[in-house]
Amino acid sequence: MKQRIYQVIFEAETKEGKVFDVVLIFVILLSILVTMLDSVLRLNLKYGQLFYTLEIVFTALFTIEYLFRYYCSPRKLSYVFSFFGLIDLLSILPLYISFFIPGVAGLSILRGLRVLRVFRILKLTQYSHASKHLSTALKSSWPKISVFLLTILTAVLIIGALMYLVEGRQNGFTSIPKSVYWAVVTMTTVGYGDLVPQTELGQFISIVLMILGYGVIAVPTGVVSSELMGAMKNDITLNTTTCPNCFMEGHRKAACFCFNCGYKLVK
Image 1 (spheres, rainbow, N blue to C red):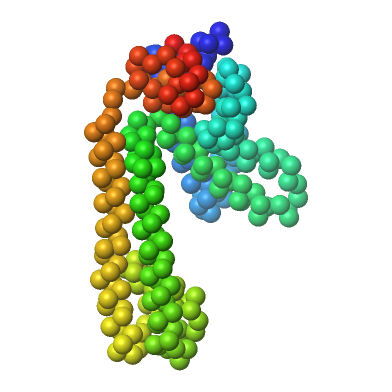
Image 2 (cartoon, rainbow, N blue to C red):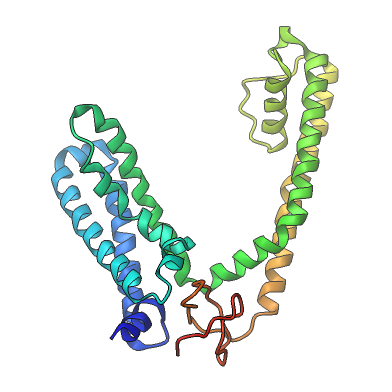
């Protein structure tokens, strides 16, 4: 029975597993919709009690799911401290924590706990094969992007310090940190307009920084796109088998052991 529950909850190769995943995705999306509507004051005043009742129902369903996942996991602590295990726990904690915060003084904290429910959307990532491609591309791109970000950070620090010297306090560049803030806003082409260079030299530096900003946007996009194409090109036929030990997914169809930790897979 435990192995049967494991296959339904953790796998999607069987008909029951696919139905379970579809229903769970629907419940997650519905709970996120209720959370968003509950944040609208007009709707909260009119349907607040209904939203609270639905939240109790959603939390009960996610709690049952969490307990079943814990029950049928061969290595229970591995599941509890895995990424998706923590996300599952985070999706049910807010309501339970709110029960232990009595009085009017805790209402501001309760509002914060309600917002935590949106983390349920992260549960959806485990059902998307495309998200694994993106995750692989981001991991492969990180060394290149980190060097790129370090270069950009150095550039905005230098330009920010230069603008502090060129424009000075009289033109709003009152400190190097504020000048660096202006450099970041300008380089990313956001342009709030709260700081504007007044001198001709400052305006010339602004032009150079704006042109440089277009390259800044293109480089990380190109790096990630290249890695993503490589991940999709090297993709092989995978199944949804989840390792009972490390809860890693993305194994080959004929695999008997986990590619990450070597643990025997449940077939």
